[in-house]
Amino acid sequence: AQSVTQLDSHVSVSEGTPVLLRCNYSSSYSPSLFWYVQHPNKGLQLLLKYTSAATLVKGINGFEAEFKKSETSFHLTKPSAHMSDAAEYFCVVSLLNDYKLSFGAGTTVTVRA
Amino acid sequence: DGGITQSPKYLFRKEGQNVTLSCEQNLNHDAMYWYRQDPGQGLRLIYYSQIVNDFQKGDIAEGYSVSREKKESFPLTVTSAQKNPTAFYLCASTLGGTGELFFGEGSRLTVL
Image (cartoon, rainbow over all chains, first blue to last red; front, side, top):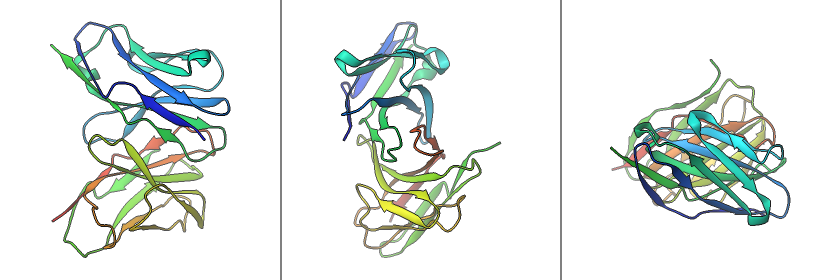
């Protein structure tokens, strides 16, 4: 079985400063890991995914995440926050051919002008 | 463009009524999912289907029912047995067991 813990329920940053969203996972096997973004009253959109290739994964809108097996972490970062980054972010873990994915509880990002 | 279409986007229901949420995809994906989202609680899995004419209960299936008669369609019925149905419902699909989900825009159900 796998599980995901997002360590911060809410993150507030100033526009132009770095963003860090933390995600730890537990899995008995090599997992696939994903970050999704959700704007209010919308569906989720894939930001990036890790599937056992490069440990540093680049995604859309300037986001990237690093898979650290020793720390069982998959933290999401962005060097410079933009107002449009205000949204909710979900970390998701999946095992190959396992149709039940595990979602973190989500992190709400607020960006201050 | 390929994608997932959920309808209606907003729905109001009186207590005791069943309501069906539609989910259609033209991505040729095998697997489809229904999630429920409540404020501050993330996404919870209601039902999922890996192939046509087959589906499995998720973590919170009580008070819900689904069908999968066509690959493209996975409707969700919220029955009167669901005690607290007011929520945001999200449909998703994926090609096989890759884990990369594609989501619809959601349906917001409010029980009056």
